[in-house]
Length: 217
Length: 217
DNA sequence: CTAAAAATTTAGACTGGCCTAAATTTTTAT
DNA sequence: ATAAAAATTTAGGCCAGTCTAAATTTTTAG
Ligand SMILES: [Mn+2]
Ligand SMILES: [Mn+2]
Ligand SMILES: [Mn+2]
Ligand SMILES: [Mn+2]
Image 1 (cartoon, rainbow over the protein chains, first blue to last red):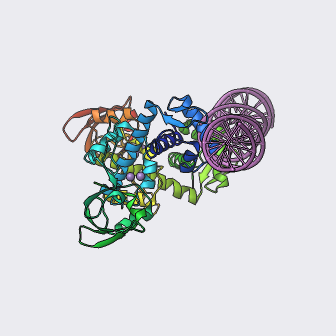
Image 2: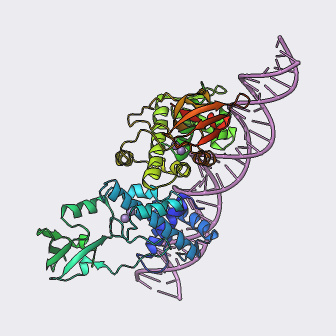
């Protein structure tokens, strides 16, 4: 059985490993967990002891199979709760992350199973992130960043890479909602900003910063 | 802001204070929290420091107004989550307590408000316990124990005092469900056991031990 | 009313998770 | 190739919450 803290480290290691390639560094973990490198080292020793990570001093860290299994379980819970909060309780997608950070630690297999089926076995969370299966698989999505699309393309908005309230509110404001299609009218050569037409016909300006954090199909 | 542990102590003090009269003892707390008396003393000093309890060495403990407010908030969350688990996820009433013990600590006013309205502002939890109001009031119920009722009376089963899986399963087995009415056929003079007729017509034996833990109207 | 029993508190110690400062290892740049 | 910089680990310590053993206070019984 893991503590909240251990669960958070596992989840964070998983996420960092899948953003960059190769081993996850102590400093990167310290930044995300908002602690100091020395504290991370302490925890890494403990997780290695429990065989949840592969860890060689100074060489970075990688999840073991068991560690990954646990990480996916926690991510699954997080995303299912986010679906619940949005679909059933009517929260908006920018309000749910912090609450799900707490709910994800409630430990009950039965609870997750029932929640999943109550929600209709959703495949994606409100931010378009795939929900790991109960068998412990992270579904593959073939998305690319909007910033990599070209003029003239019509692309469907599928997920966000950035989950901050500010970013999500900005998307709402810009009429960019997941599942909707936008047509790329123009890409500015200088700042790589986009002008796109949304499904409702609005012509919207999308900065490169935003386009980099929007996944499309 | 209180830790999980502090919240559990406040809730426990509240519950004990409303089962017995007067101050709550260190030993009673140690038993319920499954810790040792010495640990309880440490925590009482901390809670007194935070002005959440009135505490004089060797004299037992009582919640302050603020302490009671917090205790009721936690109990409210616990009971709302129990309703959710039973009504929405289809758990049975003997499975929900432990899960609610964890869910009750998720801290979000907004979450509780939305959950409450999603559930239709329920007045009672699956065990018949009243749900404290958002204003911080514990609704009064005028229930008495089934063991205090008399032969010939028809009484409505309203709540249970004991929440163990064993007890609740036994009630299911005995066809004794909350909201149903039973008619008292006979009270055994020797062991104070009851013979009652349930709503479905079954004739059921109710031991004194069980009758003491069933509240009726 | 007093002595034994029971309840409670204090003393001292441990673990988990965190910190700062110092030491060590690895990486980078000349 | 080597020195400076960056990253990481180690040393030593703090706090919350727990424990056991010992001391103290309150309660109970004779
Ligand atoms: Mn999230
Ligand atoms: Mn999400
Ligand atoms: Mn309960
Ligand atoms: Mn209950």
